[in-house]
Image 1 (cartoon, rainbow, N blue to C red):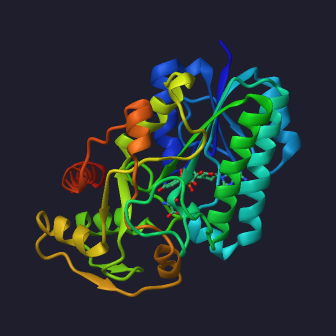
Image 2 (cartoon, protein in one colour):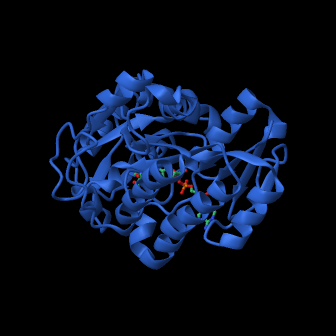
Length: 314
Ligand code: NAD
Ligand code: SER
C-alpha cells in the first residue's frame, strides 16, 4: 500500500482530516505536510513542503511512493486579498505543481477542496447550483475556480482521478480558522464561551452558507471513497448544511449566554462576503454519493459550546 500525502495538513481542515485518515488507514500510510517547520503533534509522520516549490513537490511525491493526495494547502479569502500575489503562487502554481507531479508519478487519486468563493457578484444569490455564473472577483476565488478547471482538465486529458467539492464556511473548535471571511462564526462562539463581547467584521444581516466540521470530514471521505462510475462531476460538487447571518448565530448563542453582546464594525471582508451566495443547491452530491449533513445550526452551536467549554475549562 502506498502513501497518502496531505498538503496544508496543519490547517483548520487538515488538522482534523489527518486524524481521521490516520484512524482509518493507519499511521504508516499517512504523510502530513505543510509549509510550517514543525507539527505540534509528534505522533504523526510529518514533512515540511511548500507546494509552490515544484522541485520539492516532485521530490516528496517521488521519494515516498505517494498513491493518493489530499491537497489542502491554500491561502484563504481574507489573507488572499492582503497578498494576492502570494495567493496566486500558492493556490494556482502550487495546485498545478501538485497535479503535474501527481500525473508524472502516477498518483491514483487526488482530492482537492474548492469553495463558495468561486461564485461572484454576478452569480444568483439563492440555492445556487454548480453550473451558473462563476466570475469571482477575489484572488482566492479566481485561483480556486482555475484549480477546479485544471482538475477537470487532468481528468479529461490524462484520466487522472481528481475529485473535489465546494465547501461553504466551516465551523470547528479543534483548530481556529484565521484566514477566511466566514471565520467570524467560530470567533463569535469562542468569545461567548470566554465571557467576552464580540466585534463582528461583517454586517449583521450578511447571509452565507455554512457547515459543521464533522459533516465536512464525512463529505471528504464519502466523495473520496465513492465509486468513480457514480460520479457525474469532477471537482465542483456543492456541499453545505444551512445558511445563517451573524444575527441568527448571535440569537442561537444567546440561548446559552443571554448576556452575550455583539457589535458590528464591517471591514474589507464585507465586500468579499457580499460577492458570495446566500445558499447553495447540493442535490447533486446527495444524488451521486449520498451526501447528507447531520448538523443544523442549533446542533452545531450546542456541540461547539460543549467542546469549547471543555477546551477552555470554563
Ligand atoms: P487553513 O488556512 O486553515 O489551512 C491551510 C494550510 O495551508 C495552512 O496550515 C498553511 O500553513 C498551509 N499553507 C499555506 N501556504 C502553503 C504552501 N505554500 N505550501 C504548503 N502549505 C501551505 O485552511 P483550511 O480551512 O484548512 O482550508 C483547506 C482547503 O479547504 C483550502 O483549499 C480551502 O480553499 C478549502 N476550503 C476551506 C473552507 C473553510 O471554511 N475552512 C471553506 C471552503 C474551502
Ligand atoms: N471559509 C472560506 C473563506 O472564508 C471559504 O472558502 O475563505
